Amino acid sequence: MKPLVLVVEDEAPIATLLKYNLERDGYRVVDARDGEEALILASEHKPDLVILDWMLPLLSGIEVCRRLRRQNTGAALPIIMLTARGEEADKVRGLNAGADDYVTKPFSPSELMARVRAVLRRSRPGSEAEQLSCDDLVMDLVAHRVKRANRDIHLGPTEFRLLRYFLEHPGRVFSREQLLDAVWGADVYVEPRTVDVHIRRLRKAINNDGERDLIRTVRSAGYSLDPHGLGSA
Ligand code: CA
Image (cartoon, protein in one colour):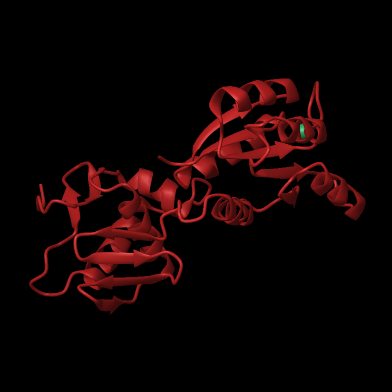
């Protein structure tokens, strides 16, 4: 099962941004808007990771962090503190209260997601998929390499992300718009037709002559990774 992340943030736009990025990367998310709700949700849902804002109503992030650490279930729970404060003294206070990592606002979502993966890798060794595969195609997420039938496949960054997204959701059909949101980002304006161009490049890269086409075109619906060889529909 995908790791569950508890997001504790009282500023709605930031909470939404966090939730969007986490879900896009396949995490499950529960969110709390204040410190007391955070403690309740943490004991109810037993999350795998907490992203915890420092300035919160009712109980500060530091206090939530300390209380989680005092509980049996929270003693080993990874916590990333999020804060507008950038001073070294605050960072030390946060880490002393038991936070595993510390991210200063404003943060870049991709950097935060990298921290999330790193913290989870440390706390759940071996639990995160390091390889994704479909049929005879294998994507190595650590080495950032793709092979099909043991030959190296060279992909551009967009094709790599596109293929990764398909591999994470085998068999699911995505519209061009859904792929744009997931792979290019919702805030980037790109013509839906651009997706077709990248799908064409991806197909050309991964399918040799005589090999089964792993990407299925679903007429008037979009595309999916085809793990069972159903062919085009
Ligand atoms: Ca806040």
